[in-house]
Length: 378
Length: 234
Image 1 (spheres, each protein chain N blue to C red):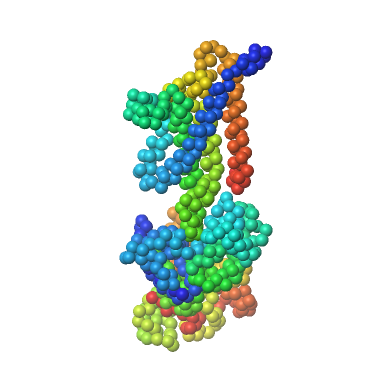
Image 2: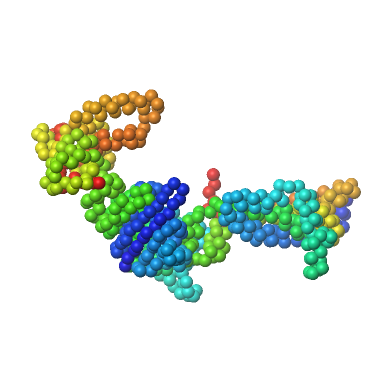
């Protein structure tokens, strides 16, 4: 078991330079749209060829530019699940599944029958893909891939075009269908939930580069890099000045934080997840920040508060001025505001079952940064 | 009315058979050549593509007599190719039925080629990638995936090609001439009898040609339509 990927490719202004290695059988690649994660998959499948690089699966070399090896996709024994499934529209379900198979007519027919049963497609053999539901199409696409027993299965954002309910359902179904599969599966996605649910090991990508790689749970617990923290869902960041081994000043939050653990010298930034704050009333405690409410949004099961940090009057004035400018130029939009002042507000998310606290005590005066939840980032 | 019936009964049906034969053969040739050319041109680099595409489409936009002029220049038995074909293979093009076919093919071919290319370029490229990762050969992918997925475009190309080939006049009359029973197509027959002032006979042929063209197109539409259920209406 093992995967080695080193890919360099330049397309116009965009340059991809990805290298990672993994022994895991369930690998996730997390990154924003356009970061090059799909291109990486395409290179592994052989649909695109890298300008330079090495791709190895279980010690088999699929591509090695130095040695002039570049196996055609037909020879790689890799299954690629496209976002739109890419089922052949003019072929029946059974014909679609048969396309990847080699051997005599009887062998093919037997294998197709097996897959139809395994993927619960009985009765749909003669249908065309256009006549199937989204879930059925996904099952056909996966059956078509599993039929020829590939060494690697690549999942290219398979759920991103689906609505929430269907997404959850299909993710679960996909996990079950893949549970017996012994090969390597790589899932590419911009959704941290999907990745967390699915992968043992994780590669985080940003603008064509690998930001970090490792065990999924470790990266979510301690992302180490700011970009990795952002992609794993951390919403609050602040630049820092390191005061000594146990003290730092969070510049964007305007407070000083005291840590039990030692602060490494190369830390440039701290992050704090929106769920992790502890509300504090009346008396200030260690590592607390005084906040005032700037806005809030209610979701079905949680509430999001946007809070202004203390001593932020400058920021306030600046924001008012900015709003005015925006209004003048008629470009007042949420995106613009967020982009301009990302560090300004603190985001706090409170689960529904804890709303009671606020009803009894009112808005908290302080939010506490608990040390074990504070992410030290570079 | 009686007069029309008399003329109809004594009608020489040869122009009908010559036109139909020419139309069918020219359509079959254009079908394969058009698909082949479409596939090749689609893959060519942009500049080369623009140039070759222009060349292949030219017969459609030029007056058919211009195409006829070039065809004569090529196949005349006083020209190298004409001499070669006649002396080595005993093939005569000028003033023969073969001339009819060649003229109709050259004129109608661009319709097939352009429609096929348009259809190929619309195809979801992931289908082709999927075929490759599934281990299908490029030939298999082309005939089993691409062509069926491009069926609406290919079908309309075929219909238009047949209709155009059936009615071809200008280039045909120059290359193949109007030899009754040999190269005399319906179009040429109509032109000829009108010159004689025989509007009744001309009218009968006009009716026949309209009937055939309409029937064929409706039939092909229906045949293609059954497989085109997935095309969205809007």
